[in-house]
Amino acid sequence: MTWVTVYTAFSPADAQLIHSRLEAAGFLVNVAGELSALSMDGYAMAAGGIRVQVPSDMAEEARALIEDKNTPQT
Figure (spheres, rainbow, N blue to C red):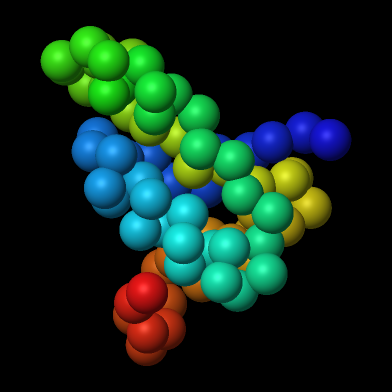
């Protein structure tokens, strides 16, 4: 399975919010770089952020959900 980044966050809380929204909608979700960001100050910014990822065949639909302002926040 190939993972595709659909959202990049610079705080773990922001990444987990998007993770929760996608998971609640039935997506398989992976958060990459979060533990490193929690263990080292400034790591998330230096490494390009915490990446919220989904399988490549779900990426377009996941991005649409993230961008949909009418979708209730979890």
